[in-house]
Length: 119
Image (cartoon, rainbow, N blue to C red; front, side, top):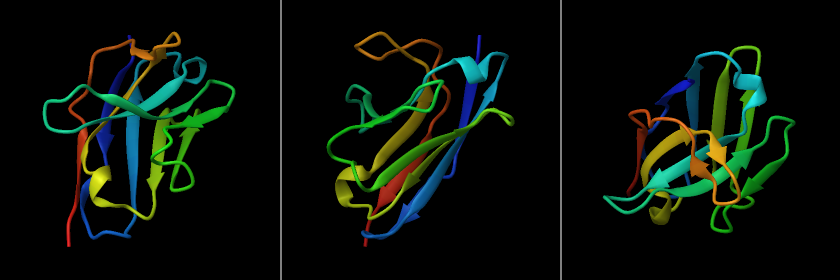
């Protein structure tokens, strides 16, 4: 089963940018769909962006035009480029394999990476 290790979070001012990475440990990465989820405090994690195994992308309305999801199937890495960050983007970001229409996470969660947006 694939496992993810997320990194790249930090403190950024409103309007700033961050690029998150998640390294997949395990086989078959190129065949998985990949999603970035965000969790605010102890609320339920929500899907922010999805990229399918063949490169189709989808985004939550709140991040369209600002975030870009991508993947490197050779090095088993997923990315989330986040631009024009605002206070509502803060939270802990996780990678996972979305399953089904509900995009249920298909593998165990990693530790995530914290994004703080503050002036």
